[in-house]
Amino acid sequence: MPYSATKLSATRFLVLAPHPDDEIFGCGGALATLCDAKARGAIQICTDGSLGGIAKDVKTLVELRRLESQRALSALGAERMATLAFWDFADRSLSAEPRLAEAIRSAIFSFQPELVFAPSLMEVHPDHFAVAIAAYECWQTAPEAQSFELLMYEIGRPIEANCLVDISTVFERKRKAMQCFESQLAERDYIDVIEGLNRYRSYTLGREVTAAEAYFRLPKPSLAPTTRSVGTFSQLTGLLPVSMRHVLQDLDAGIVTSATRRSINTTTEQINTPKTDLRVSANP
Image (cartoon, rainbow, N blue to C red; front, side, top):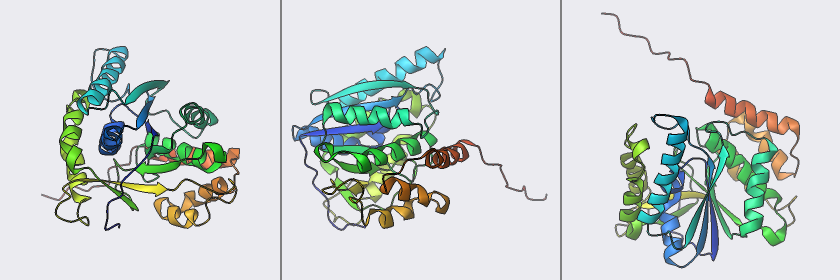
């Protein structure tokens, strides 16, 4: 666990958000801090968010969630420095099919970011996990001229962080941005959850730091793609189930086979499958 905060620096950054709201819940503080420093940002929402919330119809919900993300960016004070874009992948449909990684690779090629934010490999939501794997694949295989730092953020499950970003001065703005997601807050008090997580992450940073975001940071590679992540695999394997660790070995070797993708998709299917409730009621 770091005992000092990292000050992020970039002229361009890209945020990969599986759903409308993840860009704020996961890395809204870093987003605000970078925009305050005049960095240009691109926020890519990957799915339509059509399963998250209650509305008259799917089209209305999709439009509402996009509007919420736009309002949140304004509430964060970042609308002049960052732009929002939306893909139409169906909510809870993402997998390790090549089209997701290709879409992310295209966004990276077009925007040329120095920093890319993506969910961590520990996320329990299948869409989050799929974006994490695709982002890692793009980081691993990017040509040197398009290489970038990858910062993997936490939402649904805490990570073993190697990077903490002090968001004390922008946290009130992050809270206001989170309040814009009324469709999601009607289902759960996510603000309370994320605020608790960000408060906890300040634990090792001294009393002057009141809120922080945690990341697993993969530095910008300087080596050829097939050798650039020496040492990375040993750090990342602890973030994955034993059955998935060979996937990172394949990715680190530049090998992305159909078997590799099947393994990833099997894991996302398992995440998608509701667990049987094994609780036993007490006898009267």
